[in-house]
Length: 92
Image (tube, rainbow, N blue to C red):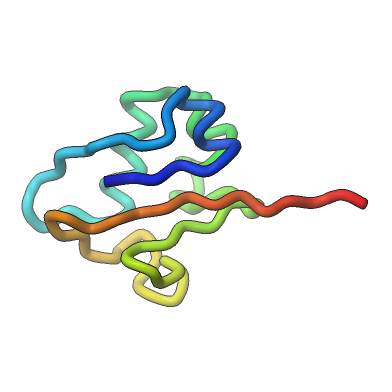
């Protein structure tokens, strides 16, 4: 299950998305699949497929841990995992 915050919610039009992945899927596989389903809106706001990395202003949390503290795009995902995309707020 994905929980989408602000920019992700706006670009996908949903707060929660259920995603089915093959066994052994990684966080990178999830991002690739989301990009296929939601197109450039997703890649512009959340994921840079050319670099296979998150956009700088968005962090991803897998089961309560920042994905960059795990194995990044190689982080293994399992049934029932919760993934949250959280954009940074900037300004003054």
